[in-house]
Image (tube, rainbow, N blue to C red; front, side, top):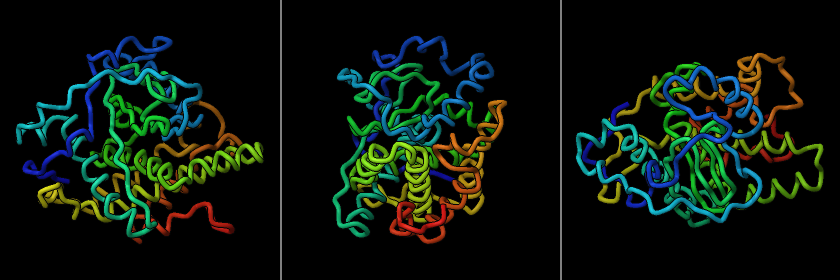
Length: 304
């Protein structure tokens, strides 16, 4: 996978809140980074299994949004744009949102509404409540933002067995899949189903997460052809090996895999995101078809 250093990042697509008040000490003493990686992996695995990876609501309401953030001025330098982690992630976000700006009207007849990614360190206040790095990346529908502590990628690589570089855009594409669900009303309808039938809450959550994986795969299918506002391609190359890294990542964060990683027994009744096999299969559905309309995990009779 090679990014194009000449591709421009969409203004406002990513904001860096590190050091601007959005960071700080980790809640409960669980910051991610440095020597803390090994110590929090079990807690993180439990959090991911509990529904915090790709979360759609943290619970509660926090009206305090992150303060005005650094808009990644360092990424104006073409060399740094493809070398710095935050700049590379900003290019991934630009590609993902460029895809949905075209694809959402074509596939669903709806206009895409951009969502900003907030990079934070250790702790952040959101429209869905306060969160720390231990919950992993998440999307908040209350403020239309994706939140990520970039040190999560260290956990993903060193502790959860997904070292490939394409793991990063896969994670972001999954979260933006949740934003698409929010725009289309899928997330709200799922919440209503959960309220009507609380016993189905986990199963409904699994459907939502697998659809987000499928949406990530649909983006991956088109990623090599996404362009910036000037028509320059965002990726110079994207290979089958990169896609396999995304599929590997999907498997490493399956509910069953993470329950084993956390030292417990596999309990399907607690699944909220889907098994490794399900997550990989639905990513492939999106990737192989290139059609987000094929990602209807809520369709009656569909095999999850």
